[in-house]
Length: 305
Image 1 (tube, rainbow, N blue to C red):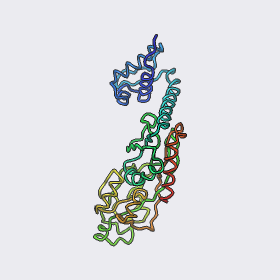
Image 2: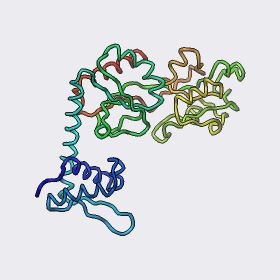
Image 3: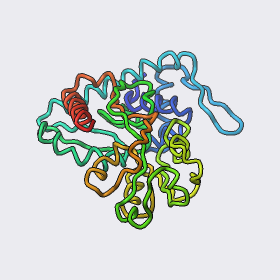
Image 4: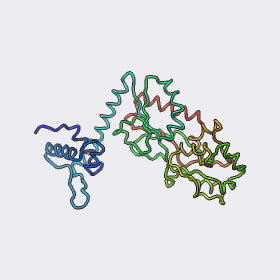
């Protein structure tokens, strides 16, 4: 029997196995569920044996056969190697493109103000930024390198700590002139607080409740105030005079240095449980453009300290 278009068929099989669903695989591949099912069936026909056991009753779920489960790691490794090969081809071209994933807030407040320095060092490399809060699949999405914020426990990636940061309150000079003085954390009682909801508190992200408890400001109400799910927008709300924001030092550094924001209570130093990490796949570690960007990130982080 003639083999099917094996690359697309294998891709359909791998995606269906990962999602346990033809529909979810179809969404990822931007085709119809019927097309995914046909690709998988063509592969099964060529092999002469099934790859999935289809459950019935309720929501259909795909279960790998024993043979398919044994083969799946090698197929995934093969796709990884193909992606690395394509990356090397791009890397060897005259104008390589480096795809970098970061959060929208980190891009706005830290990376973009500095990226011109990298372009001056590596003018032959074009940076393509993917600003997304979702954890990206580096191989599937063609991501070369990223900066993630968290505890550093991302499996399947090389993880290197880039920066730690402190958490502290900030406000605009105008707001402080209208609402001050604020001599100690207890003075925050009754003041408008701005909350950063961009990261879940259950993984260690500092909240107003945690900071006020650390600072001994037991009279301040940590539950009231504006709530924003983007760290850059939190700082902008403070700059615009809407209240006191609980800032992350990496994000707020430029605004504080420029005087757009004032750091309150500088004697209260709370180190965040989370940090910034450079992440990339081990297979991509030898890419010259990735290593150049990694070295530049570390240099900029050292200057920041």
